[in-house]
Amino acid sequence: MTEADHHDRELEELELELLLEAVYRRYGYDFRGYARASLRRRLWRRADLEGLRSLSGLQERVLHDPHCLERLLADLSINVTAMFRDPTFHQALRRDVFPELRTHPFVRVWVAGCSTGEEVMSIAIALHEEGMLDRSRIYATDMDADVLARARTGGFALEKVRDYTRNYLAAGGTDSFSGYYAVTGDQAVFDPDLLRTVVFAQHNLATDGSFNEFNLVICRNVLIYFGRDLQDRVLGLFDESLPRRGVLALGRKETLRGTAIEERYEPVVEAERIYRRS
Image (cartoon, rainbow, N blue to C red; front, side, top):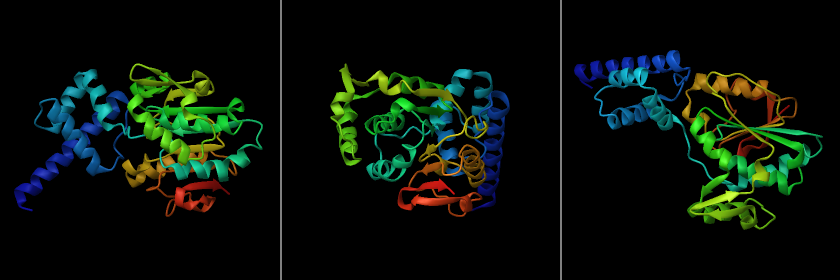
């Protein structure tokens, strides 16, 4: 790397830090702890789409144009999801977690970073089939108001339903999947009763605190986008939200190994990153 390249990289890093600080101080969204490589790509993509040549230019536009902020939030939100994604994970929930949950008079589940609601619907269907939905409350949270609005509708693209059906069957589904939804145009709209016990709410894992005690916290494939300090902060938040024998479920590329809370948890199914507070 030449001296000029080094100077350019230092300047870009300064612009990036100032942009993130500006977004936090002006709007309260905190991306300062996100993994840098992915964040840099997303910020530059937004700058290019806005016709801007620098991150400083993006900072100015975001500060003066709330609509630009909304576009940026959509870029920074991680919305890759599917119903019954990783079927063996959902198998493990039914086999190794639900039997103990069934012994509780009431079950509280937190789906953190719920995106457009596919995982929420998957959990609701599984709880229904296990006879627990009527005495459960699912809290579905995300920092993005737009994806929460989509999640509330219970509608998903019809073209994806074939894959979702395959996942459902592989995950141990016991009913006819097609009985859960009606086709409306190009949407599969699921039975509203499945979301009757769901509370949708905005919650920013980077800045907001614990708001209840849960028997099961599910946060899959979110921590991988955070830097180590923010990961520790979020894991501490989940730890505060779980009682003894509460269950924490992460994504396959995420783990409690080497974290500050590791010693307080035992693996239920390590391969599926499901842990119980001991």
